[in-house]
Image (tube, rainbow, N blue to C red; front, side, top):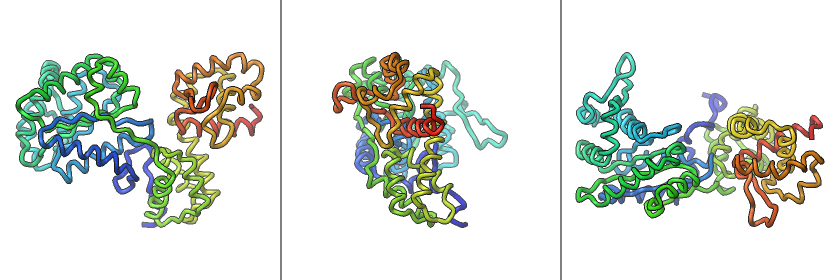
Length: 400
């Protein structure tokens, strides 16, 4: 297989273990909690960080480590769009079934769930948790006892269980979920029968704050693990290692461009890396390859992340013109009201304050206290890069 037969980058997918960069401190923190849980001490973590920072990829890696090194059953459930406790519990047990197919403990799982297992294809390879609504409601109430009984069945193969609840946007605003979570913690903590459980929620910081506002006691429950952006050195290592795996050399000037535009976001690194890989024709990444890759990646990221979230919400030509002007300078994710004001046309100045309020509500910009009064910054580097590209395009077509 030649080096150009496949890209080492995986945009839009969890990061493969072999391409994981950094995060040793966070991994150690979570794994320590997993190990503590195997002794019967309940652990409740909240993994947080900006969009595109790699939360789901880290959760996946930790699940693999917990399984391979410590004999812990890891269940990673994605809850996008879920708003009910019934569906939350159903997805946890459904993930358990799918993780167990073909494993040495599959017979025990089949016995444990009995008639609740449903085959969903012709050959019975894929299974689904098919409990009735009444049974699901009972399992919500008896979630802790169910997990305890399950682990008793799985010993000695498994020493504990790691349950990851990922993408909790719909649940974070549910007082029912917040109260259920607090009751679950209290039930396990006060029981005389230990439950070796590590529960990890994954979401944005405002989701954690939402849950705490609904159930203030959760503030003491959550052990918060925050992911920050990669350092320049970590980003550099990522690109060098990824390209070298397929026999591609990256020139120093090209590497500087890739690192700078990535902004420390793993999701952006994979988009830029993949786009640059596709631009290259001679197994050597030059400055020109990197620049073309960045432009191509920004366009892809814009269509994936910006257009659905922002451009569909702001149809005003004046708003769009102002937005492009805020991002018209390369690499400057911060801007000041007083510096932008002279660049605005009269009709744009009339709506500028409304524009800022709208952008803050959409999560595009936020006040920057360190810059003083009237200072703002883009909340997400991914958005900024696309707006910058839009500004460059508009300038070429004389729309600004």
